[in-house]
Amino acid sequence: MAKSSRSKIKRANRAVKREKNSKKELAKLEKLVELAKGSEETCAEEGKEYTVLGGAEEAMAVDDVASQNPQTDPAELEDLPMGVGLKTKSGSYPIWMNKRAIKRAKIVEKRKTRQKNKAKRVGSRPWRK
Image 1 (cartoon, rainbow, N blue to C red):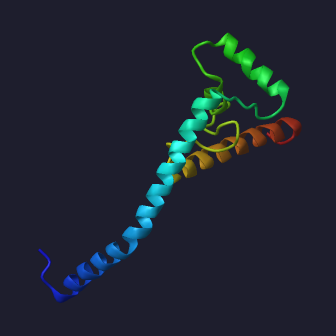
Image 2: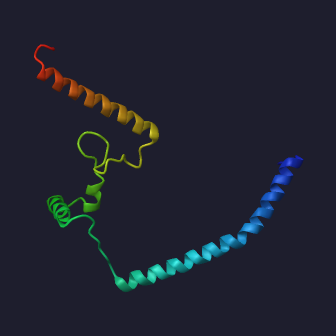
Image 3: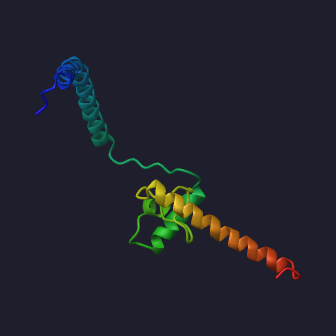
């Protein structure tokens, strides 16, 4: 397909680079395989481990909600959006949202907060309707 001298040189250089880097890549892959074998052994030995992040009160609250709602896992409850907006409890947007959608959501959120604040101001000043 490619017949120009430039593309031939590029292909040749890529082949040289592939040969040169193959040793490093092979070493990295072998290292990863060893680490994976080691982690499988430790998981099999230790069984299941659980860690509670945050305070005991938060863990109790999550347990209470989980007992009321048996269909949902406590891990899923952490990432549920709070209120009307699309933000999660941590203040970040869902993974599936692209930058454009996040930008639009921020604009809509800003517009709503402005309207709320404006309504509060009008209510506090009766001469300003």
